[in-house]
Length: 269
Image (cartoon, rainbow, N blue to C red; front, side):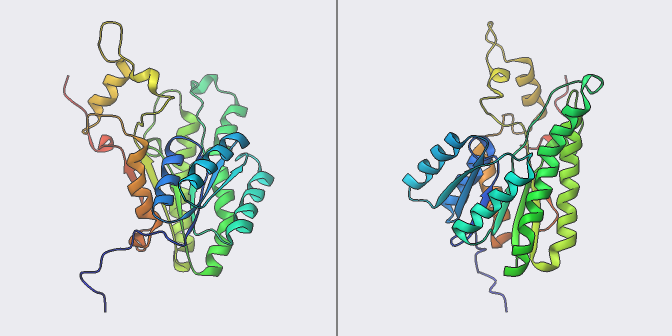
């Protein structure tokens, strides 16, 4: 019989997590959240120096961490990544597909090569990594897969046709993995971040010479009930929830961490 007063287990002690695109930004914050919750974490980025730096940063704080450079558009690189994690930690309990790129180009000016590159990194790579880890998850009795989707999984916007197509596809890949492998105790869910403060978005939040907000900053604030940009740390709690046993009956869901922007029509002019 279930204990009505038992607290759900958000503890990740003994779990092994692989987080792609985790040398900075959202991926780095999610990896840090996992480490603090007790998981052994594999950091993945394109540059060896970045992976080594973050690995040292984590291990200096007493966390188990492995840094592995990988090109998420290359199948052999992805296979080597998964093998390295399993060689070091023996298994992968949690996979976070976070690595991604965006090319802001009007659709009629975008080359097919650029379109395919975005699809390869943002959609095909998550498929390949998930395909690589699912068999061992089945064998050991379950696992957690978290795909970092986007508000562009639901909405379109100027100049992001490839990104929106990839993230929309990632949403449906998430639902299909849940459908296909739920009976194997594999939960696959997505997180859809809102607009997040980062070095890349810093120019869009700078004050104008007259002291006013940047026009895009004003636009985001006016469309977000929380009236602020998100922070990478805002993704830690949702990620730990979806990686833990607290979410064992949550499957095929996209959790939008966007300050309410998708629920809001915006302020009246």
